[in-house]
Length: 88
Image 1 (cartoon, rainbow, N blue to C red):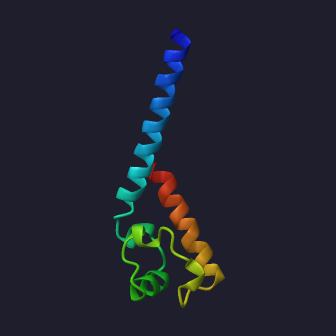
Image 2 (cartoon, rainbow, N blue to C red; image 1 turned 120 degrees about the vertical axis):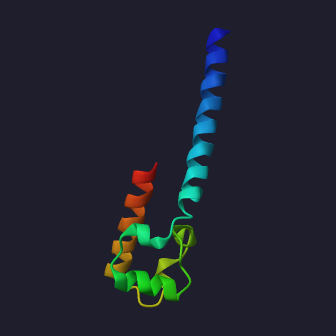
């Protein structure tokens, strides 16, 4: 009986922590893209195309952003990965 209660509490805690992480990702996404420390060229390309916050980049198809070649896209994804890894 106690093991079942412990498992239920543990499951609930896991669910709460997962929800918290998801919320934090989106709240941190409100940060301006300048926090990614991208080269000015990439930052200017993103701003010109309407990407002003990290949140704007979540779920965007980076291959469709004009001016971002493969190497710039790789750098952008690395910076995004580092941002979200550090912020959690």
